[in-house]
Length: 99
View (cartoon, rainbow, N blue to C red):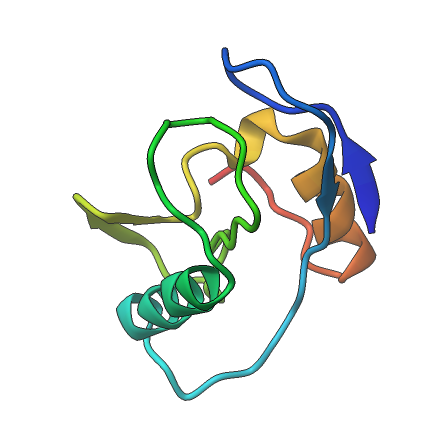
């Protein structure tokens, strides 16, 4: 787990970040839906983009798959700008090569 400064234009306190590696039978879209359901169950309301939130679950990578849909892009389009994601990916043995 790592504490990081918030990204984006909305003033707010630091975040606690944790990346998980998991195996799933869910496809990328179903996995994203499950992550959004976890957020909702924990009271997440999407009101202000980049604003304060109780929980934020991102699908960063999905094996070697690429997804480019309006509501789902994998690898996550912000991966290159989030140093903490890159550090955590390395810790999990999932170094991202930028492609």
